[in-house]
Length: 327
Ligand code: SF4
Ligand code: SF4
Picture (cartoon, rainbow, N blue to C red):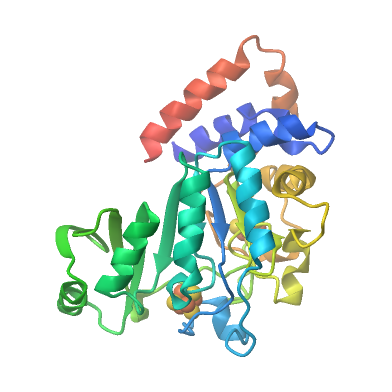
């Protein structure tokens, strides 16, 4: 059912999304309509070195750099131009709470993009009552804690952890715990190290030959920016690895570059991935979303759809139905 809905939805998407010869106005409209998450690294440091993370394969402790102010302002300025209303997420491969500049950056996003949601994913190591207060002051919307534990059933450990930061459990739903006590949404996901089945991270963490038969839609909905200003194809990739060189889709350090131009030039890779072609080196080894067996965009379907009168309203309706079914 899911694969069928995904395939229909993919084939009903406007063909402009997969073309580079479109105007910048069309690009901005598509960006606003499709990108639901702009994911950023505020810096390149994480205090942990988890075995299932690309951070375990590269030195991210010696040369620590914070995202340049000019690049951050360039991103926010572009998003402001389209009154972006998706999520701005600080996650990727850094620990956002390891540097105090995060509070001002959240506040900048919230004051410039009032319709966007500011979200942060943390490993919880830096969380204190005072940090929660500062996040509230910056107007964070969603805090997600990825709580990694040595224990198979860490609930006692978690209770101790959250009491230390004055939060309370509202509901436990398997590995997801909803917390109260902060003026923003707080969700804790707990994972026992022993039970983690890692993403291959494009062959960096695991070299799995996947022979993908299904499309990857990540670059349609997700825009990823590392702390260096390099933009990446998806959050499974990291510019530090030469195997992922072709996943670098743009560089915001270049004076003429901006997120819309990069989104436009990435159209061919979107088309490629939507058609379930996997020659891109990192995609060959990627085990993400493999359950969407045979989901793909067909060139012929694209041409036929354009002959159907009113296909766009039909697509938008299906998109709403799919959203309700899959949530
Ligand atoms: S805490 Fe997260 S970012 Fe840090 S090493 Fe572990 S998985 Fe990677
Ligand atoms: S298939 Fe490629 S683009 Fe998609 S998530 Fe995997 S590495 Fe990223």
